[in-house]
Amino acid sequence: MTTYPRDLVGYGSTPPHPRWPEKARIAVNFVLNYEEGSEYSIPDGDGFSETSLSERASEVPQGMRELSVESIYEYGSRVGFWRVMRLFAERKLPLTVFGCGLALERNPEAARAIAAAGHDVCAHGWRWVNHWLLSEHEEGSHIRQAVASLTRSTGRRPLGWFCRSSPSPNTRRLVVEEGGFLYDSDTYNDELPYWVRVGERPHLVIPYNTDSNDGKFFNPAGYSSGRDFVDYLTDSFDVLYREGRTRPRMMSVGMHCRISGRPGRAMALARFLDYVGKHKQVWVCRREDIARHWIKHHPFDRRK
Picture 1 (cartoon, rainbow, N blue to C red):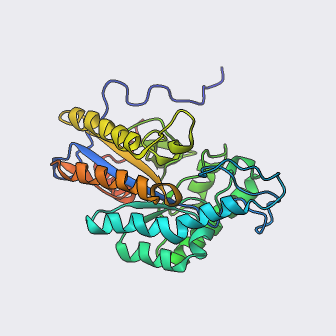
Picture 2: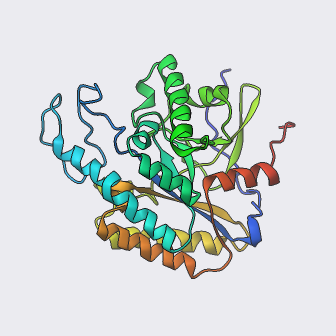
């Protein structure tokens, strides 16, 4: 009988107590996706222009440059990135950058600012492309390029991995074979980190999410205003904070430079940051911090 390749049970009714620092009831990790300049584009030889996660629907035929959408992406790196960085600097809060190697190569000032602020960088690919369309050889090459590029641009090797949208069947194995990573976040199935075996090697997974994520502004069933966004984030935080009296969890908040960096959405983000700041026993942390905490306090059990 073939082994079913999915885990539909997880921790079940008895999740581990994470023992977050200072008895925190919730760990909150803010993620800023930096993709601008690495998306599909005709100047980069892709034969078509990127049109997803954009303010407007494209009317330009495939195969032609979509200059309007290109400029929307440019807004993210030219303006939106700096606005989000200021919000966190003003409040002395850390964040994690899901950074694409080529994107940060093309904006060295942004790469230096991330490093100077002490934010951690999780590799988001060499380019913001669909890994499931890459051959195994191509994907391995992209992983190596991303590591080398981000190490050069930020001065520090990325310790996490996250694909665009979805990994390929080979991604996790290739990440583990590359070595040097503490975790990947290519899954959306839990609110706590967990261990898996990749071959005979233990590997940590820190789940991400697509609901507390500004990408839903461009989902027909998603947010229509900044107030929708902050209301949803606040409700999510309140449930997790209340449950955290006995069962602490983690909350990821996904942001994009070209989305949350717009003034109306940045105001919503600022409101949520201030709301979180009014609560005690909250650990606002980087993804690297979560990985190191879990490795120390919940090491892989080789007996399982």
